[in-house]
Length: 230
Picture (cartoon, helix red, strand yellow):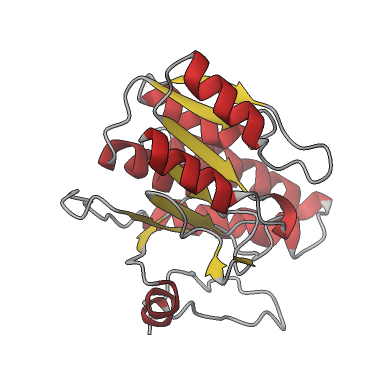
């Protein structure tokens, strides 16, 4: 069984603690997933492991946290269009922009549990020698062509936070086909603790005047600590 990363101090009444069986996940996906404390940190290490330094194609509609590791690594984002039916990647836009700007990396997110057109995009990327990153933060557990979303291309990641299809206070798992990348896993227990308290007070417990002052303090410390992580 995977090691517990959830801190259960101040666990809400009736809250069920569950583990992700990492060995089982690796078995059914055929990948070797690695734990990172947040999705943006997982993406940072994916970008580093694949040596992406110049430009990357991103969906025009994406969580702002995706931009944090890209800015940190000084990679230039180029935004591609989406399909109006499901807000997923437009293959035509990726094809056009990758050739127009000579982009050799693309991140594709499958939104709201709906798989993007990953099979066609993956084939195109292989043909054009473009690195494909499969962002499954919004679609953990979904399948396309009998493959799990998050396992297409050269790397992929899933993440768990309030509002995601699989909810948790924080956490992420990623894989990369660069098996030589040295990922130094660290334990940020204070950050986990503060994130859990944030999750507890805002998502599992109604806010009142008494605990609002504590929440503000937790959020301040969480923001301060996050500046020093990755």
